[in-house]
Length: 95
Image (cartoon, rainbow, N blue to C red; front, side, top):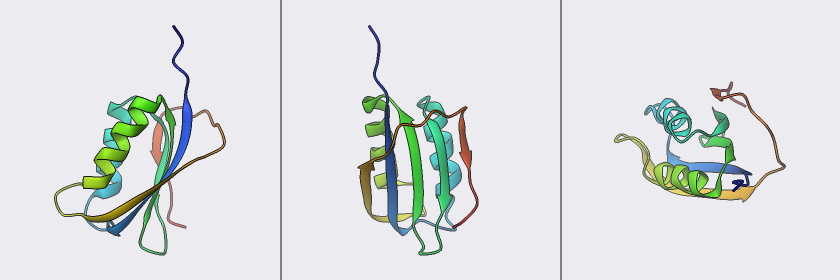
């Protein structure tokens, strides 16, 4: 049986910068076997593009809604993104 993959864009709003959110998010995504990237945005949000199974993307979304202990996540926007293939999960520079 082949597991289909999806690509999602997730954007976390709230107190999500300067609290270890990106690093912990990248660790969680890697543990789930997702490909993609995470970065801070100038508007104070954290953006993720992730590719993997729906089950693993949903697990990442659940983690992002909580974040690390110092974070205060107000909401996480989720939408599908164009399919992409990644070699691992990385941090990207702020935009």
